[in-house]
Picture 1 (cartoon, rainbow, N blue to C red):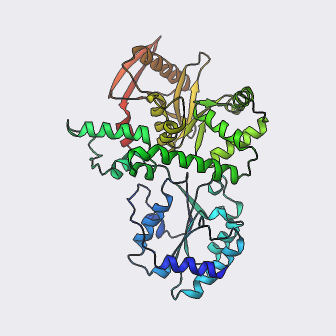
Picture 2 (picture 1 turned 90 degrees about the vertical axis):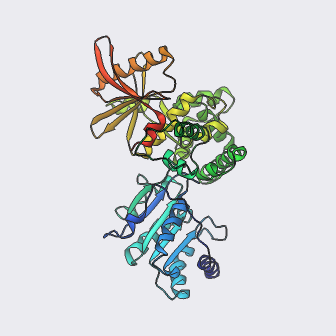
Picture 3 (picture 1 turned 90 degrees about the horizontal axis):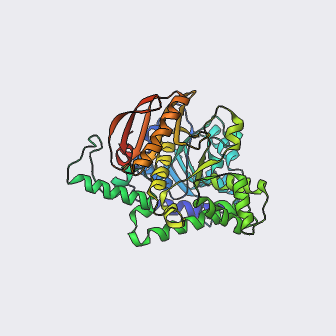
Amino acid sequence: MDKIIKTILAEWKGKNIPAAIPRETNLRDYLNMKINKIIVLNGFRRVGKTYVLYDIISEILKTSFREEVIYINFEDERIPLKTEFLSNLLPTINEIFDKKVKYLFLDELHNIPNWSKWLRRLHDNEDIRIFVSGSSSRMSEEEIPTELRGRFLEVKIFPLSFKEFLRFKRLNFDFKILDYSEKEKPLMLRALREFIVYGGMPEIVLIEENKKFELAQSYYSTVIKRDVAERYKVKNEEVLKTLLKLLLDSTEYSISKSYNNLKSIGYGVSKSTLQKYISYIENSYFVFSLPIFSYKIKDRMQYHKKIYFIDNVFINSISTKFSDNFGRLYENLVAVELKRRKKECYYWRNTEKEEIDFVIKNERKIEQLIQVCYDLSDLDAKKREIRALLKASKELKCKNLLVINQNYSGEENLEWFGIRRRVKFIPLWKWLLRV
């Protein structure tokens, strides 16, 4: 065990830190906090958590000795999945390095048994700044083990935002202006189209176009195999794969609907098992869902949930239904961005099945209603979207109304059967670039 630790530490001492393109997530503010907290980076695999760590490590090494900063990736196949590895780690570091370790960076630590108890002991007894990353909701604020309560701060890492995407593509726009020249705007719109189709997974953004979908499909296979099937010991992997395909080809789901769809194609699986499978998929951060807006918990439980995916590239590379549906792709982008902005979101639907894509709630108040409508030139579609928006505005007592669309920016005073409201319209690219 000690030999493996020494080998990994020796490799780390001689390792060149890969250059990282700066992200909007800035860990520098956490370095000198008066109260020492464990910083937990969480998110879907391959969204760039490791490079966010590399970025802050490079910053620290400008003023610190290499022996004071330790990074370990627990997905290294040489590391045994045993608690003893963790128990021996700090004593071995102290044995072979002259300097006392001040910063510890632990990538995918949750793979090791009893990691949380060891982390608590380390935090409580050592003066070390600890940064941990993970691609499982077991390390999230909602599910963090009891022993770490009050000892950590969660930082969620998402695929690239549109701002970050533009920087990765080396397109240097002034984000404070948002009124670009005749030369700049076509570049912006071409970049937006690429972002809509291929998404914001960092490696996929940087790889050549003819390899993007292939790489996305390899991520998808890894999610099924490692983050769901192996992690949760799923017995029927075929049902899991089929369920994922059904979700990718859907805009909403319920357990009953999924059960009936699987039954119709010959898969016999219980509703309780389906519920577990969906929770496993959500725990991997591959998908997330929004409930219907209602003040009644019973309604939120029994109605269908809207389903969204962590990145558009998975819809385009795997779904057989939505790859050319820009309305669906626009809506998915908006859902991910709202989640990135930490908004509490729901959808709204009335008895006539008229719908609002996003109801934004702030504590007990409805803050904003958002419709996503790709093509406003379709007058029937525009009327339908506005009618639902005005009805929801009256029912939910919210006058902050927004329509995110392809290219129209402005405000209109609109009326429907005595309901009169001022509605704002904004193109998707402008909304994405505003904070």
